[in-house]
Every structure is written in structure tokens, then in C-alpha cells.
Amino acid sequence: MSHSSTKSSNPLAALLSVFQCENPIQSALQSLKQLILPLIGMLVFLLIWDIGAKNIHTSLGTFPGPAQVYEQTVGLIDDHQAERQKEVAFYERQEKRNAKKLEKNPDAKIKVRPYTGKPTFFDQIGTSLITVLAGFFFASLIAIPAGIMIGLNQPLYSALNPLIQLFKPVSPLAWLPLVTMVVSAVYVSKDPMFAKSFITSLVTVSLCCLWPTLLNTAVGVSGISKDLQNVSQVLRLSFFTHVVKIVLPSSIPMMFTGLRLSLGIAWMVLIAAEMLAQNPGLGKFVWDEFQNGSSNSLGRIMVAVLVIGLIGFLLDRIMLLIQKKVSWDKTAILR
Amino acid sequence: MTTTHLELTGVDIEFPTPDGPFKALDNVNLKIKKGEYISLIGHSGCGKSTVLNIVAGLYQATKGGVLLDGKEVNEPGPERAVVFQNHSLLPWLTAYENVELAVNQVFKGKKSKAEMKDWIEHNLSLVHMTHAMHKRPEEISGGMKQRVGIARALAMEPKVLLMDEPFGALDALTRAHLQDSLMEIQNELNNTVIMITHDVDEAVLLSDRIVMMTNGPEATVGEILEIDLPRPRNRIALADDPQYNQYRAAVLSFLYEKQRKPDTGETSQKPAEEEKLAHNLQSEETKGEVSMTETTADSEKVKAA
Ligand SMILES: Nc1ncnc2c1ncn2[C@@H]1O[C@H](COP(=O)(O)OP(=O)(O)O)[C@@H](O)[C@H]1O
Ligand SMILES: [Mg+2]
Image (cartoon, rainbow over the protein chains, first blue to last red):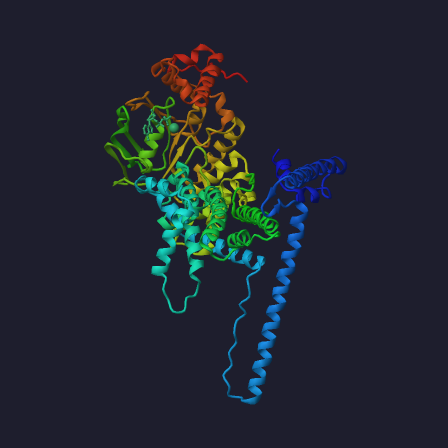
């Protein structure tokens, strides 16, 4: 049961297992089925999308179908490459100019100006990824220790639970103006290491994605079996050893449930925050294209939508891989 | 050697419940000598685990107290090692690492790294677990887990070894194996042991004294039966031993005549345990009614082969 279900969750594994099984014909059929079903689903979706798109007319032209999206993807890649070439050319020119200056006067001061071209789609992806990971990391850094403390301490849990429940459902859009103002007021430095917009996005993301990790960690920690707590008491484990040897390992499954929820929320929140605050990233890309209103815009937004989904999916898969790596219970079915 | 090692005096305990305090134990008194093997037997829910937990320091007596070598017990500690019913091994550690956690805790600064390693391996070999010492609990059988649990407790070199139905969850064959292992180890180490059991044969086979508890609430020590059988004991030889069967009958009589439970569906609380007791009773009955008439020695009684 567990064997087949772990296989079905991953078409690639299914493909690989064709070459490994004892009963090749039967398992090949089985794997084929597992490969074919998602493919059929995909094809049906493309078909419906194509037909549907042709029948939706907007002020910016017909809704983009699969073909337009493909076209725009190629266009965005071309744009990116063109921009990179411009950048290379810019630096080459600058270098030549500087070399000439030095020839004339070896003591001349040389300035290297950074290239300030328009960020491409892929630059925006990079910005968003860095922001979401930083925000998620920052949130986890707070949520995991806090969750452990709350889980270990029932009175603390009772005291903080109402607050947690109150802040958990708050939308990022509500936090954003406050965060922006606070960051502007507090984060003042002549030579800032990070852009203000980055800090604003990061804090907003952290505030929103803190809660699932915090709550799940707390629940995991408070659910440690009485027997293991007794073992810890009989052995007179120190607080630190107790946390490291007993609390952390036994709450890892719940903690990861929380972390994966948090990362999903972080990604969703980030796109919204970037859009609203005009902070660099995929959200801003979508907004800019929307404002642009060219005939390509809807197609490009659709590309962004798919990329956002794909990245969200990949982030979750990466978390799953990490979870499998650190999980002590290798028999557990993780998906 | 005959002086009191562990002493429970006038132990009462009340648990706070939503319907007011629940008095589980009332005036429990017990004196245990060094190296003695004591079994606690009684109906399910009477308070055996509670007694053990008080000795372990996991529960605090409301009145009275426990003295170990003249010192009051009021918190858990490794000198009173516990073997729990469901092994309670840390599932993320191997058998070796589970024992290691305990050994590190008890012998930190007293043994060198190499000595600790030898000591861990020695204790695992005592329970015949050397071959699987680097396996995780999920990779070994229930009986093996219980062996590791015992090794962990033994490795702490406790003054008292406390075991709460250590073999309760195991099948009969595995249980017999573990009982034999335990007798072997006990022969060598001569630990002071308190073991809770619901198996009358187990109690008679292993113990120096059997402490029989009355039904709860307000349970207390009902009778104490001295088991004067020579050691080493052999289960097969003992099956035909009239003395052995007499002890067995005495315990059964206590449980099913003197402390008969009113049939008020209370058995649903812990079906497995009650079933086992019922099974004990049944097999006894099929051997002849004599066994139920207590103390009078009936040397002719033969256990059905
Ligand atoms: N922590 C507790 N809180 C309330 N009642 C308890 C607690 N522990 C045990 N009891 C009650 O005390 C009685 C004795 O329990 P226990 O010692 O576990 O019985 P046994 O081990 O003999 O089956 C039971 O009625 C049980 O419900
Ligand atoms: Mg019990």
C-alpha cells in the first residue's frame, strides 16, 4: 500500500521504477498508467483553456491561450538576453573609456558606474525568490523557538493563544501600510545594506507566515508522549538536552507541516505585497504589465501566473525533500 | 543485608478530578530489603502504577512517603530506573543510542568514553541485543524493544529497578523468553526490583514476595505472599511442583474470591489485562477445583500437560 502510493505521487519515480521492478511487464503497465493520467489531465486543461480563451474578449484583446503564452515566454527570454548583452556592452564601453583616461593621466580618478537597466522578468523572479526565502527564514527563526517555548509552557500558551489567533488571519494588505511607515521611520541609515523596499516586503512576509510554524510547533511540542517525558524526568535530562534529544525530534513532523504552510503563505503574500507596494519582484512585474496595457500584457501576466504557480510548487517540493531528509520516521508517508 | 532498603510508609494519594478529589491509594505500607524481587499484583485500575510512580518520584504522595536508604524520595532520578510497559524508547535513536543517553547522563565524568562504550555494549549483551544494537526501535520486534528498555534501565545501575507490566504487551512465547533472561540477569546482579504484573505465573516464577493489592478506590496492600522457591527456578520443573501451584492458587484466590470485582462493566477499562487474568483463572479451573480452595497443600495436583 505505502509502496505503491509513494510511487504514484511522483511520475519520475514511476518512470525510473520501470527499470527496477521484478515483474517488468506488469509494473511497466502500472507505471505507464501513472504517467498517462497526469498527461491526460494536462492535455484536457490545455484544450479547455485554448477554447475558453478564444471566447473571452477584453479591452486588451482576446484572453491569452497556450500559444500566446508560449510566444510571450520566448519573448521574455529574448528580452532578458538582450538586456544582458546591453549590460555587457555598457561595462565594456566604460572599461575602454577608463583605460583611455589612465593612458592620458595615470593618476586620474576612475569611477565604475553600475548598470541601471530595467529589471527583466527573470531579474524579478530572482528578487522575489530572495525576498521570500529571507522573509521565510526570518519568520522561522522567530517562530520555531517561540513555538517550542509556548509548547513547553502551558500557562504561556494560554496567555498567548488569543493573541496568536487574533493576528493569524490578518491579511498582508492590512499590515503593509503600517510596515512601510515603520520601516521608513526606523530603518534609516546613510548607506543601507538592504533597500527599504526589500525590508518592507520581508517584514510583511514574515508577519504573515509566522503563524502556522509557530502554532504547529507549539502543538507538536505539547503533544510529546507522556512516556518520553517520564523518561526525560527519570534520566534528569537538563533543559537543553531535553529540548535537543526529545522535544525537537518528536515535534519535527508537526514543525514541518507548519513550515510548509508558512512557505506557501509567504509566497502568496509576497506577490500581493510587491504588487501593492510597488516593491521589485514578480508582483511588480504583473502590475507594470497591467498598467502597460499593450497587446502583449495579458500574455505576459499569464506567463507570470504560471511561473508563480510553478515556483510555489517547487518550493513546497524542496521543503518536502528536506523534511524527508531530517525525518527520523522513514516509514511515514510524506506528501 | 536484612535491613530495610526501600520503605513506603502510610502512603496516600489523591488526584484532583472535576468531581472533587479522587483518593486512589490509602495507607500503603511496604518494606523492601536490598536485592529483593517484589511483584505487585491486583486488578486493573486498583493503583499499581500509581504506587510505582510514587516510588519513581513521578507522582507525589499526598500523605506519607518513600524512603530509599533513609533518604526521602521526592523527585524522579536514575537511581530508581523505570522500565515502562510500552518500552518508551526514543524512536529516533538506535538501541545503542537509547542506552547511551542514559549512560551519558549517569556516568558523565565518572567513566571515560571507552569505558562508557564497553558499559553500553555490556548491558545490551546482558539482554541479548548485541546483534541489533544499531537498529532503531521501529526496526525491531516488541520483545526486542522491551529488552532494550531493560538494558537502558540496568545500565543506570539503579538502586531500585521499577518495572510497570514490562511484558504485558508481548505474546506468551516472547514473554517466557524475556522472563528467563530477566532471571538470568537477576542471578548475576541481584538488583532490588519492583515489578507490576497481571500474570500470576510470572509473579510466582520471578518474585521473592508477591504484594497483592485490594481494589480501588482507596486501594492498599491486601496480602503479601512470600515465595520460598529455590533459585535458579525452572518454569518446566516448577509446573509440576506442588509448592509452586499452591502459591499460584493463593494469588488466584486473593484476586477472584477476596477481591472479586463486581461485574459492572469495569472490565472495559483494560480489556487485555482482565482477559489475561480471566485466562489464568480458567486454566486453573480446568485443572481441578482444588486449586481454588486455597492454602491446603494438595501435593497430588498435577498440571495438565
Ligand atoms: N494522574 C491521574 N489523575 C487522576 N486519576 C488518576 C491518575 N493516575 C491514576 N489515576 C486513577 O487512579 C486509579 C489507579 O490507576 P493506576 O495506578 O493506573 O492503576 P493500575 O496500574 O493498577 O491499573 C485509577 O482509577 C485511575 O483512574
Ligand atoms: Mg497500570
